[in-house]
Image 1 (cartoon, rainbow, N blue to C red):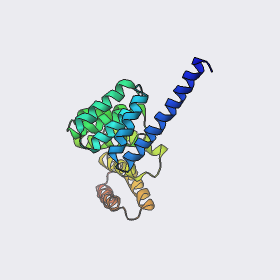
Image 2 (image 1 turned 90 degrees about the horizontal axis):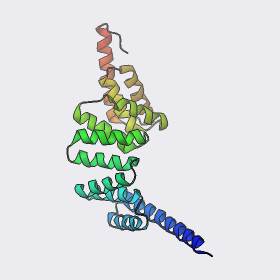
Image 3 (image 1 turned 90 degrees about the vertical axis):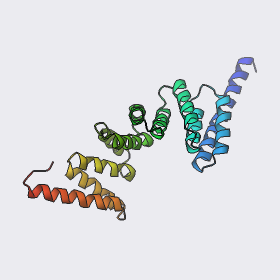
Length: 212
C-alpha cells in the first residue's frame, strides 16, 4: 500500500468515526444526557474541524443548559463553517428569542427557512416571533409550504388556522381546524378556536358581508 492509499484509508476511517460520534451526540441530546452529548460533539469537532454539525450540536446543548452566550458562539462558528447551515440559523433564532431580540430572531428563522423550508424549529420560531412582533406577513407562506410536505402535522396546522382567522379567511381556518379535530377529537385548543371562527362567520353572515 502506497502513502496515497494509506491516507485515503485513514481519512475514510476518520469520517466514519466522526459520523458515529455525531450520531451518538444527537442520541444523547434527544434523551437529555447533555454531558455525554457535549463530549461526543467535542470529539467530532476535533476529528473534522471544518464540519458545522458538531458546533450545531454544542449550541443545542448550551441552550438546554441555559448557557445562551455559549450557544450563540457555537452557532456562529457553525454558520462561519457552512453559510448554508439551516440548523445553525435556527439556533441563532432561538438565542435571539431568549434575549428578547425578536427582530433578529425573525431574521434568523427566515434565513433558516430560505435554506430549508422543511425545518420545523424555523417554522414554529417564525410563528412565535411574529406573534411577539405583531407581524405575520411572511409566516403563512412557510406554514403552507411545510404542510404541503407534512400534511397532518398538528403543531403547524393549528398556528396556520389561527393566522387564517386573523387574516379574515374564516373558511380556510374552519377547514384546517376541522381537519385537526378529525385527527385528534380531544384537541381542546382547536375546538375552542373553531367555535370562535364559526361565531365570527355567523356574525359576518348576519351582517350581510360575504366571507372569503
